[in-house]
Image: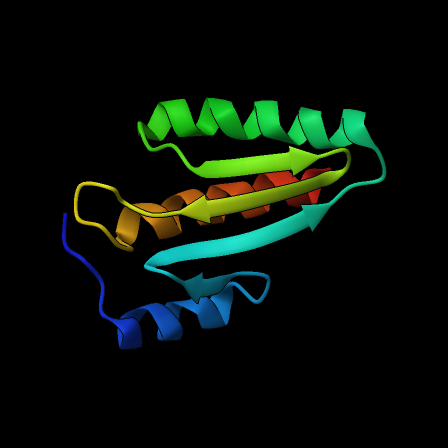
Length: 95
């Protein structure tokens, strides 16, 4: 898996306005109307993570979901992180 450069990451983030690049990872937060909707999104994202065999670092507090994507094998951001971010965006869009 090829590690992306900071320039490559910043260019790709133009298509992901809700995401940032910090500490060798893509990060974002989503706020939902309530806990149930937040957990629904978490479970839907989990299925996508399993399909890609790529798992985020994430946390939630009531209706707030924080996600951090990084490819641990290379200690940074790769195409796989952007692929999962795109899937997450599609899932959240439906919520």
